[in-house]
Amino acid sequence: MRYSSLILGGGAAGIAAAISAARNGKRVAICERMPALGRKILASGNGRCNLLNERLDESYYNLAGRGLVKSVFARFGKDKIAGFFKSMGVEIYSEYGRYFPATNQSASVLKALELELDRLSITIELNFDVMDIACSKEQFTLKSISGKEIKSASVILACGGNTYPALGSDGSAYKLAARFGHTITKPVPAAVPLVTKDPLCHPLQGQKIRASVKGLIGQRVTDEVQGDLLFTKYGLSGTAILDISEEISIAINRDDNADIGVLVDMVPFMSRPQLKDECQRL
Image (cartoon, rainbow, N blue to C red; front, side):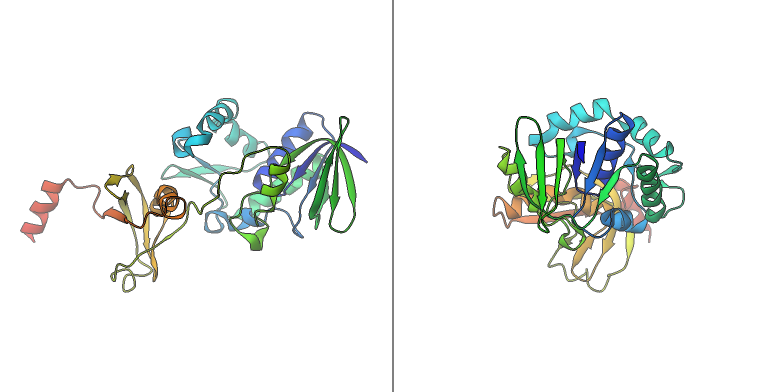
């Protein structure tokens, strides 16, 4: 069977792309290398599935891609994203600027997506590990490692990066993109916990507070972020740390900069004079 669109990758982006294409009358198939769709959806948001953020702004993204991100949000912004999920019966609510399903269960989001895929008669090819993509003037031909071939007028790469090989994102899509002339910027970890040498982290492991944090890269201080700060036996985690981790990771992994620190304000709701007065009072 020849399809209008083939989606490589059955994660959140791939499923959304397939649903959008099918709603516009396209004959669509998803090719997923894992034995099930949406493995990372189930793991997202600590099992709660962070669907959306209150602020969608290109400034939160890699500098080189901000123009593209801005154009995407201009066409498919917060209201349309919320409407996309509500159209499938997924009610959402906001918590500290982040949106979650009312069920607080990632599994309910994945189930709603799967039901919509079925309603739209979208073909699902599981365990389809792409070995080769051939391109002619008329079509693309995908061949899996097992020898199966599928033909399509267009292909959408939604295979993820190199974030979680056990859940399907092993970086194999970079080679496919490079074959069609795309430039690959060296990927580095982002939205990750930080390993630190601070001896206080180990005895405080498991403690979580609301805090304000900033990265210190050499003499440069990154933008301030407020959110959850979680102490772990190896260092720092939580939403605030994940939000500042990209710049730190780039400095460490691309720039070989070891002069890195984290500035933490554990009482962001108090000014410095207020904190001083409170400490003196006690």
